[in-house]
Image 1: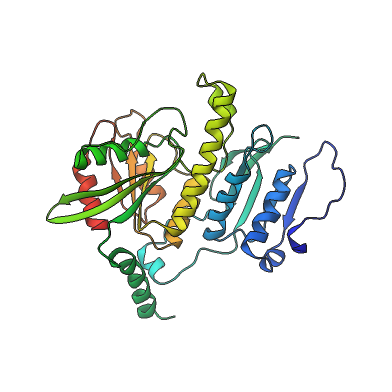
Image 2: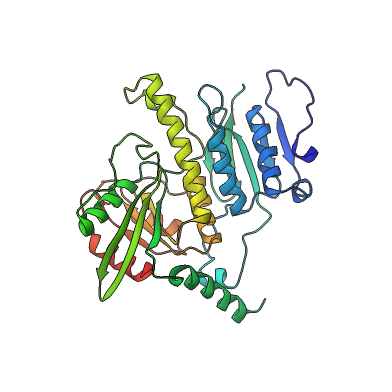
Length: 133
Length: 213
């Protein structure tokens, strides 16, 4: 599964590495490859920014797999925020019956729970505090 | 796909799930930690069977494994529904054993609780995709509903075409704001209640019978 690994550019010192992953790169991966790609980076202390986000099914699996990897004093889980919100106030029953899918153009930020903290989020802005490892 | 085809497929998916057989519908009680899921499950189970589902606590993740109360028959307004109530652990994306130390817990107990909680959440997420026929989503109406976990969970439930009722719990608290919840998820019906005090349970049972019956 060569695509499901991130290149190791060496020691990032005291900094925090951001992996900005394009929608095109994610498009060619299976759900589990996407989840592995995200969690491997986050467990290394990196912040992952997904251009195209994840589907609801993939989000569900991401939570499930994250839970299986939490361990004391090592990995306490993930912090995740999505912009624009997957919540669409105007999408009612008819919208869902008509088969309208949520926009694929959502941007998702995922980081280690012990290093990233969401300070503020609204419909146009995610403000997060990232601490060094 | 055209409107009629989509409409027919959507209705078929929901009705197939609900009326596939005479087995009780498995209704999962989902929501974030400490929203009052177990208190609600116990209230429903006690009202209709006389037995509780599991212990309640103010400490997060008191429910670490899903618990099921089978064959709970609810009758309201001429409608009868028999459901299996599945009380699930509070869904979260992070569990840190250190948060349990603040509740006067020893480290070994906190780590054990943490491990059990993560297993329970993983199981609950798997069941949400595979093994429930409907969802009661419980929120604490005194806290902000605009969290990523709530948004994700509601999105996942919608993507599964599961019927869902949103319960705004803890209306007995001074900070309760039910409108904040109905504004957050206007595409779903929000029912206010206090599972602890038993407030508005008549409407709760009416909606359960209406949605899942």
